[in-house]
Image (cartoon, rainbow, N blue to C red; front, side, top):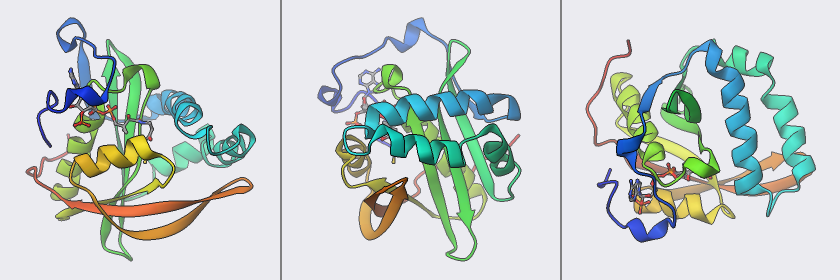
Length: 192
Ligand SMILES: CC(C)(COP(=O)(O)OP(=O)(O)OC[C@H]1O[C@@H](n2cnc3c(N)ncnc32)[C@H](O)[C@@H]1OP(=O)(O)O)[C@@H](O)C(=O)NCCC(=O)NCCS
């Protein structure tokens, strides 16, 4: 990953990392309510211009209940990391090693709108890649909606190449997911 200070013109608001305490750590069961909150607030901001809120709600209510997340949490080969600022969770990454495809996926990466552009997404991606390396993968895969151009541009700037497409349905709305990958550049790091 490039220096977090490179290409800073893309984001209008910057926070001074020196004045806050930032932590990236493995998620715990206690984080799941925060994961729900971060998901919903970030979806509304990132997706509601092209997916009606009722469809987002439909998908959220089906897949992001505490029970659903708890089940996910206990699923083998699924992992997650959270980003904390001053002790509160403001973002997370969720990962899955898909054995059938033999691919390591970042299945979610969300930072609360007010905390974007301060390097947390980059740090969570590194945590995911260190885990991927530990599991024997040399490539990380992910999907992003075509209309989500800020995220798509961000991934491209960070070296992802998009090579496949797949439909993705939320409620009544179906969008196109671009599926992309990048080679992992970090070393493996064992989980504690
Ligand atoms: C896309 C997303 C995950 C990126 O995470 P992020 O934390 O905002 O990204 P970062 O802060 O790591 O990087 C943003 C930019 O700010 C810059 N930056 C970070 N910290 C900085 C600082 N202290 N000073 C100046 N610039 C800084 C980085 O250089 C980076 O620029 P680059 O993209 O040209 O490299 C996040 O914006 C997000 O959650 N978006 C909405 C939800 C979404 O679309 N998720 C992806 C779904 S597939």
